[in-house]
Length: 464
Image (cartoon, rainbow, N blue to C red; front, side, top):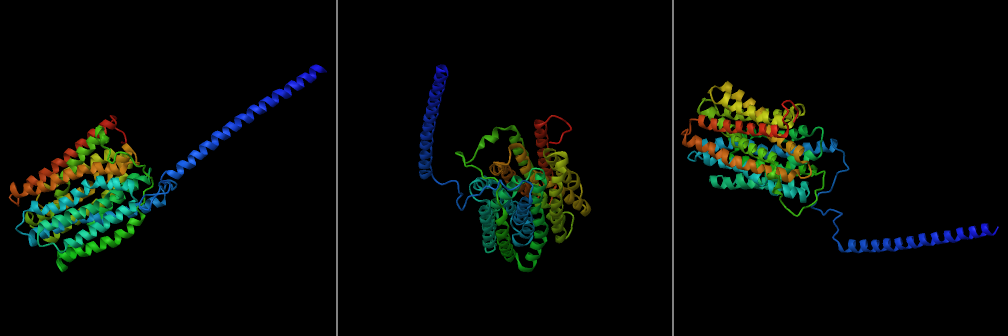
């Protein structure tokens, strides 16, 4: 009996000891917890409120599904904005033909080509600050400001058409700065909204430049003939402001990118894959604009066709480019993005060297325009997709901005050199040296993309 009492007493004492220990531990935990809470409250009171984005910052939309309905709204928005930004660049050949034959007949072709060269070139070199802005500022605001700058540039240019250097500044440089603020979000943001149909989505966006060139080229020609270049520039600027203001409302980034200490990260240049793409893009853009700028005047001066025939060649290139940029997105699903990009630049070089160079017949010019249009825009449309595949979509805006420095370099070398070759070697009428220059650089770009393909995968038959 006493043993039982002693055991019970001992058990009770042990239970009390355990309870005291637990209570003590809980009390300590409570003290630690309260201290932590007080510390967190103090930090939250002193730290800046970064949880809620400020009015100019992007809000994360990661809760919205990938490959969903809003992604296609972003695609439509980007397509419409590129229709006017890149569409104006692609249709500059109409202005250049008029400047060369009517408004500035004493100016060299190489001088006149600087307007179109800077439209594309500065747009690409400004891609780095545009990409940085897209990471730190709401992309809707970035693209809206870009549209305002483009409109103002063209309207001011309409009052400066008495001297080519004024057009170089306004229609060339200032317009391209605004176009960059539209181009970078339009080509990079849609990739964030898709995984399965990414190539098709970006292809539809960049097809907007072909669609713009398709109708802007004859529309510009008609406005110039009936109203003059001044009113053609003013009307285009007003339309750009109205349409871009609405389309920019839907250009929303899906991911909120965390800011970094480095504003621009150049470490990607240590990646051999990026270097190959960079050099390939330099070569491709060096030869890219020669058909767009020279094919209309070649048809008039060499083949003896009418001015409208030359304008129609630009229309054909833009129409075929629209189909090609969408079609390459579907082809890329079957063959792979890098494979398709290499194929596009190779076939583009053949359209220049095989169809344009040896012949001076209207039919072959039309065939060259169709083939070139179908494939020339493929590498432009696939570049953002390849970037997303190799480096992800989180930093795609800044990486694309860095890559488009290559397009700037190629453009600054290509179009002026092409015009200088025509003036100095071809004496303004022999286009063969210019055609060879364009075709060879386009062919070299395909070789660099083939090396990239081998570097990524050495398997001969593989979708890469």
